Length: 106
Image (cartoon, rainbow, N blue to C red; front, top):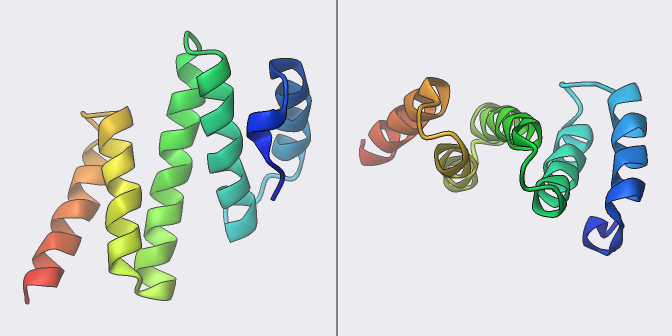
């Protein structure tokens, strides 16, 4: 995966267009690349809330994949916690976290 932190905002915007052109929510690599891309976009353009919203959505997809396909509950919890920091009102993230915390206690 490229080191997006070394790219300029303009270069990241070009990569964003290419990334969207390959859209595939079922492709883990596409989702992971998107999380990294939108993390860097939001750090370079802090006023653009859309970047944080897309990152939160991708983290939800990533967390669900980690939970369901990998049964990697700790990593899934971390993904959902990141969503909670980005979007404290995100009900889907809280629901998923609640399930994982409950499951971990059993």
